[in-house]
Length: 209
Ligand code: MN
Image 1 (tube, helix red, strand yellow):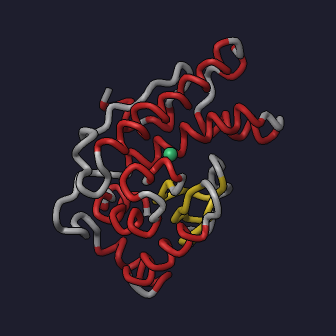
Image 2 (image 1 turned 30 degrees about the vertical axis):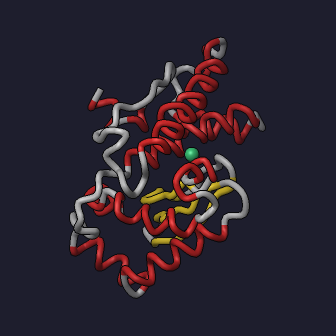
């Protein structure tokens, strides 16, 4: 399934959960196994099942990728399809941008990535602060994102619920629904954001930026 995991953006019906490059306890102590079981194993599986159920009788939608389904749902105001496809897309994005902590928080970052972060935000410290502030500012459920707009400029943005960022290329996201951290950090979103930085796959980040 490694290919499917790498190419999930091309996946079409029937959708299935990805085989991650790391085990469910591999992100500890930053994201614990209990959280991963609830979040990746059960909650994401529910989104996938719900999406497959919608598509089962919709032959016209069965060869669409997640982004194509989301666009279709936006255009046709199909709220349920929009939510389920967005939920799968956002979680696939989130879980495949993570990797076990190495102890060296910035391992894998290329000089080019650092250059871009510095040019836009002044440096890693400011970028992380601004990204964390965006993540903290999400009222209720949603995500904070680092994205590249159509001009190639880096921007930090947020989305509510299972919306995906529009007209840009996502580079990094953090899921700040309470289900992403409540089992470990209770309502302490800041503690979860601090932990998150330890398990970002900076190699992937550098390729995307
Ligand atoms: Mn989630």
